[in-house]
Image (cartoon, rainbow, N blue to C red; front, side, top):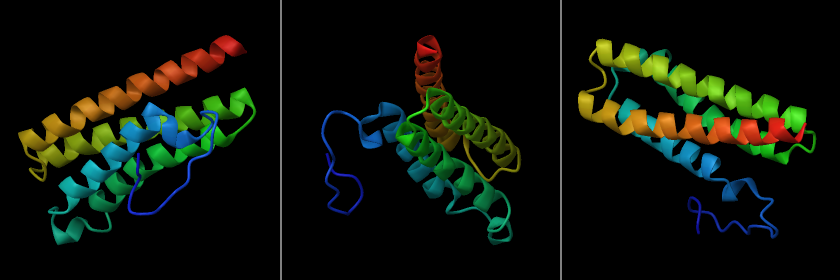
Length: 132
């Protein structure tokens, strides 16, 4: 599997964050968020557009950082932060829809990805809490 355009060598033993389905779906969500915000009004570039993009990109970043931590409580903390960013994206989607920046088709693309990410993260968090 190739990520992006780089030639990234994955390590072995399933320890790489790239192997996490939660991270893969988070990247999908970030790409879709960047795509749907491309046509937002120019005056939103440093407001709603930027906020949605930062929240979307922070999901995968926090999953990666959490996965890289050795302490279970730290892992949970980063996965919880990622989950908070998902709620932030969802809220921004409601706002963007009401402002008519997003249409129903775009919302129908974003919503399942957000929900899938929430479920995957909640599963990771539950499994880690069970180890405590």
